[in-house]
Each structure stands twice: as C-alpha cells, then as structure tokens.
Length: 99
Image (cartoon, rainbow, N blue to C red; front, side):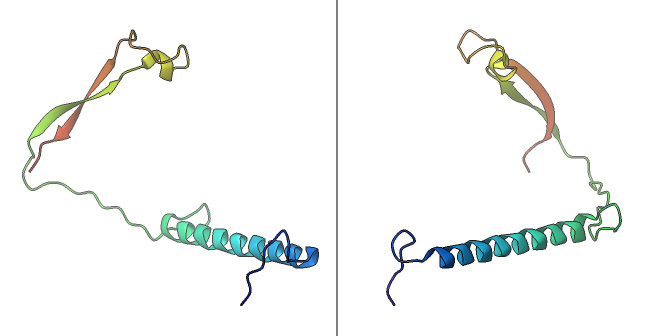
C-alpha cells in the first residue's frame, strides 16, 4: 500500500472528511471518559459507585516529623525572580515512620 501524504496526495474533500471523523472520534472518547467518571464519582443527579470507608489501625503507628521546604518564597508568590538571597520557609508536618 502506498503511503499518502497530506500535503501532496490527499484531495481537499478527503482531508475535510478525515477531520470530521477525527473530531467525532475524539468527542466520543471524551464522552466515554466523562461517563466513567460520573459512574464512579456521581453527579448532582446520580449517586456514584465509589464507596469510601473509614479505616483505623489496629496499633498506633510511630509518628515522625518531616519537612517541606519552599526555597524561593518570594518567587512563588510572584514578587521576585528566584535567587539565593531568599530565605527558605520550612513547613513541618507529621508522617508515619517506615515499617
């Protein structure tokens, strides 16, 4: 089978037909994805199939503190460009230790 190149070999009407087919294909894919999301999570009119249950550990795990460090706070807030003279802003949070 000979390859067809869009610029050289395909007539304008065939290109329009391909574009319509691709647009419809993408639209159908998006509709299917939306249907699956609504089926799982629900909507204003329909209850979803996802059930989330509370879970509690049998034994309390060992807790530790960890750190998340924003190195350029003035850059992320839109005030300045990132530079080494900005003070890091460490944020502590609790984690469950390994094991």
